[in-house]
Image (cartoon, rainbow, N blue to C red):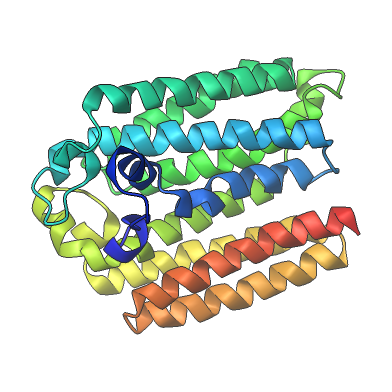
Length: 292
C-alpha cells in the first residue's frame, strides 16, 4: 500500500498509536465490507447476527494485519519510515498477543453465530496466515489475498444462513459465488494499484508483486483484467437481487473505470480513492436492495 494510505498516521501516539498503525483501520472497507456483502446478499440479518459477523470480520482484520506486519519485518526493517514493530513502539510479544486475540475473537464470534460458521472458520484463518509467506515467492499471492476477501463474503453469508438451512449442501449452494469472485478480483486489482508508488522499494526488498517483477505496461494490463473481471462478476451477481443492487453495480463499474483512468495517469492516490468508492457502491447497493 502507498505510504499515504497504508501507513496512515493516527492522531494518537505511543503504543496505542502503534497498534492503530498496525491494524490499519482504513482497510476496513476491504475486510468488514465483504462480510456485510455476504450477510445481506440473500436476506437481512438480525441485529445479533450482524454484530457477530462484524466482530468476526474485525477479528480477522486484526490478526491478519498484525501477522502480515510480523512476517514483513524481514523486508521492512530498514524502511525509511519505521513501522511500529521495527521501531519498538509495539513489541513482537505484543504483536503475537494481538494475533492470538484476533484468532480467538473470530472463533468465539463464529461459535456464537452457528455450527457451520465455527466449523468453517479455520479456512479463513489458514488463508489469512498463509498469504504473508507468499509475498516474496510468487506474484500470484495477490490472488491469495483476494481469496481472503472472497472467503469473507462467503463467511458473511454462512453467518446468517448456517443456522437456518437443513444441510451443508444446501448451505453451499446458496453462497453468492459471483459476489465472492467480485471481491477476489477487486482485491487483486486494488493490491496492485495501491502498491504502485512503492515499486522500487518492493523490488529492492524482494517482494514478488506483479508491479515489482513485470514492466508497467504488463501491470496496467493485469489491473485492467482484474478490474474488468470485478465489474462483470459484480454486475451479473447483482442482477438477481433487483434493480437497486444492479443500479449500484453499474455505478460501481463507472467508478472503477474512473479509478483506472487515474492509475493510467500515474495518479495513484486518486486511483485508490475512486477504487474504494467503487467497492463501497457495490456493498451499499446490496444492503440497500435488501432494506428497501
